[in-house]
Image (tube, rainbow, N blue to C red):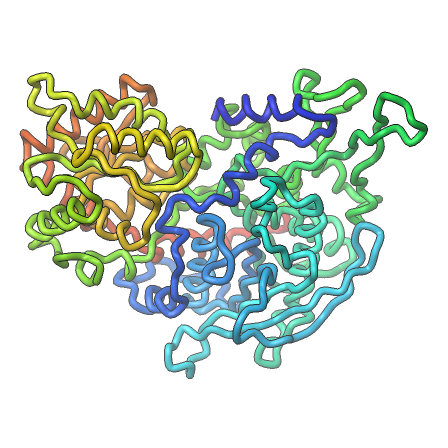
Length: 599
């Protein structure tokens, strides 16, 4: 996280306007990265996953009569730039499967098939009245369409959401849309109106609902709920849980900006950019909740007071509870390194903070039924099946077909955050035979898209070591074969809120090597040895990475029984959503039963 903070500080020096740390993250927000998350997913497959769970719920909600409204800037399969889309899609289907009446609300970025106009609403924002339209789609969990359980998908339509370049930024110019603050403020206000002005099946959801607001794009929802709706005696019984998927993205926008001097002077002048009146929240406590002031050394021009709107800060201050995508990441959010300047606030709200590890699609990611594999396998045929898939993978990506080597793979964004620089630096060491009977007996597969410098590095390594190193762009079909055919998976991330590849890998009997951070340490057991499902790196450094990789490869090559034990334990671990939804149901019950956080 330190490199990200340094980049943010540098960004503040580049021009006359204060952009805050989010400006340097825009390329990451839109990248198609890691990777199982961002493939095209058939909605029928996601419904099938919900209806074919092998685990049984261990917790039954005490508030099944309270509808759940999931508010998200992207939801699969309609819109996606990252893991948020798939996680929110799974949450909607899983909570509907438990018996909640469930609505999922997202912007309408395109003309979606099979969506019907439901209603419209005029909303006052930024000094103007704007009409939004609501489109609806009902997706039943019963594939025959006769059941009562399912999800009401509501898409908020307005011209500001129809952009050719991406969800959040112009891909051709590489810059954030200038009106993003308006776009997502309008979206959250529309989402607050939807339960009352939309009546799927002829019945509105009403005002007693549980809102699940996801990440900075939906962060204004608890702010408006607290400071506008409740004072108007609306949504008095509603509650809001704010879910953090990546705390590095906080939705930071300047209160002031520099503009050219209209009188022709050489020095620009400071003018108001966005005021509390523009949000329609003047005369409330919202200003204190939303405003953040950077210290003097992080300000970018003379006269800069450092004041910015931090949407995530507003959500933390006003929501009823906070969740994030793993227990480990919840702990890291309370530290200066993981709190991105909001760690003190997170500590203050610790009693209302929780971390719930994401699940994976256990129907799609199933080696027993996966049609992409040369051999399907279960626990009894694990080692024979993986041997066949290893040969398949080697042949598919141009590695020498050789069952005597250890095949180590990486799939993810080719960025510093994922540790690809550490992997690339260590490849010559992995390839060199120094007589230790480990290095020199390793093959490496790197798969992903990302920073150009790392893409070049990946191809240079493949060119230098043909048949021993392969580097390819992300391919969703190869990803399945990679999990099945690899012996080890590399995830030396500098930080990882949750991570899903390490779970998919274990489900296919591939042993992960992970940094012990965030969701990685929550989903990979590294000690005691007799219970381990993977290997852990701590602290993350080039030397420590080599040490752990050597240990993992040595175990595979020279202690096969221990390695097979790790494979088997990971293979039978339950990474389905069922146990996760138990925890969501508990948190929903706690939030409903408690009074509002801000009273």
